[in-house]
Length: 364
Ligand code: SAH
Image 1 (tube, rainbow, N blue to C red):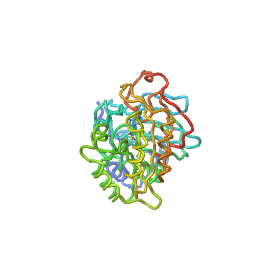
Image 2 (image 1 turned 90 degrees about the vertical axis):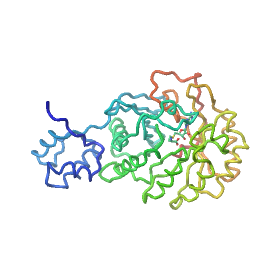
Image 3 (image 1 turned 180 degrees about the vertical axis):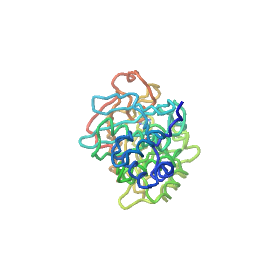
Image 4 (image 1 turned 60 degrees about the horizontal axis):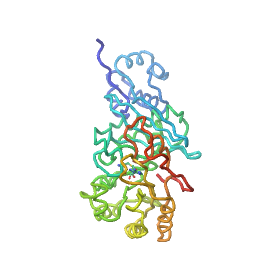
């Protein structure tokens, strides 16, 4: 039996340098391999033509480059494509490619499942299985780029897939570091959007990074009573505490915090709610992204009528709050917000639940 090889995929350049030290005396070889793996999507040492042949042979004996594999692909009529990504231990996560005109957004996961138990979200039902490694986070972007041929394309990246990024922040930030490198994906960290349930220590930790992604907060409710019920994390970090962290959060010039607000019929879609939301956001550089509830098959909640979504938006606009309505995408393949839970062959509940409508762009 040959010795098992080490997987280099997911390593930062500095780690590559350490791992390759026994094989090559030249630290710049690590930089070249970094560029081959992440920049050009090459996993075969034999094809790394700027490395000396004998070194390629040794690399091949000792190492492998194994990105996570795409286990399945489902494409919705609107072009939204959901990928199931299989990890080395057999766990799976989902990532979504969302085309919008010329723009492409990749929505990626930070954990297998999620521990936070938001009542309206399907991922919550999986519970938390484990955190993703930096390589598994980078690997989703890598695999989607490979599959969709996105080399030489820029794309938006949002951490809005499975999991709570703040509960795996070190790995998320390490992954964003790899993705940002010019020899890699050249996706600047400040152009990535990280969405959180409002995990206060995470927000405070993120504030200390010199280079930060944009911040999106899944707010969903405007009173503690309601938010406690819908998002149990609120019992730990109530609205007041959340907003005090947000008011201290360092924003770049022109940067705003996005507040995602999942609208559910009869739950949080009243004009009174819109008014409370505007009051909460008063004085904070913010914008609101309204998400019409996507059905999860539990039957507990339902999406509000289209006119109520618009009415909610218009009230916020009247109150001076910038607001957009997130386009509903990929619902029939269970690729929409809150629907990622590795379901297969499940027809969407209740027939056509989505709506479309003249909606402004997904802000991410
Ligand atoms: N855990 C992080 C990252 C996931 S983002 C967070 O919650 O922010 C997923 C987004 O989808 C969140 O804004 C969440 O509120 C929203 N969402 C969850 N379930 C949904 C549903 N059934 N319909 C519409 N949006 C939903």
